[in-house]
Image (cartoon, rainbow, N blue to C red):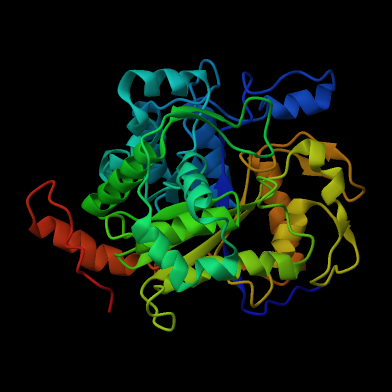
Length: 431
């Protein structure tokens, strides 16, 4: 059958390693296949293997590469910026048009040891790496631990719905709330491996200051803003809080990329329908305006989507599609994600797959199997073609689409005019 394109294009993205599928994060179950998947047996760990895989992904059209650093010897998460820098430098040399994103929601014994020695900034220290010295275009500065702020906000003001987050009352709460310095164990209610949801001991005030420092570091370097949603309304509240708070001003430079990890937690389950999917996407797009001026676009918000479904839950998500040319046919979470993203009105910019999200394949009959990132790329490409969508590879078009050219032209130029280390003028606004 000849494939025709309706004009919908998507940037192909890979989350190459991830944070939770590691040997120490998984308690063996006795199911050999399940255990192999959950310990990350097919995840590349050495720089050589990762870069060879990145070359192969690039040749398939991948232009966004999201990476969590891992200790190449233990295969556990690490805060070592040397590991991040080694991958970034080679990616910049070998895959010149690849957008690079570093993950920041890191836990595990080695991460906790580093944080205990150097402080909570270790979790996000890669934010301050200049791009030419092995940094990244993006760092996901909001995810698991940062949401501790919103848990405390809820205890003081009550839980927020999508609608109330858009209300004047939320703006008032943003200004009234003062993060406490009370240290508590931080563990989130997420779908994860046995130890993948433990984030150590911290406080809302520490998280506020780390978040603030991360935003300032990105601005100082003239680089870009990216946040990750893992709990729907609570994640939206965190992003809205960061946009509105006068000491944070997330996206004041005119750009935010929001990564929606559907299936990551009970609060952000994988959608059963396209309508459910669009509700979350539309909420993220609402960050383009401020609460005080709901009709005025203040920043460009782009959307990345991923299917973060555990292999133990794969069967439950193998259900009929409700949109696209294969509507009515049963499909796994990843294939359904592709179908949703391929819809002309999806508002999705980057379609993400990879070992971080769902590190396995699901056959047309619902059977799971081992896979690596290249295997998943083939699944995604086939589904895109079946849905009449295409992969966007034009570098100029990608930069324009993600709102990055304005930051490059205005913010980075401003940086070069100022002494090293002075932040960009926060009064700068996009034209």
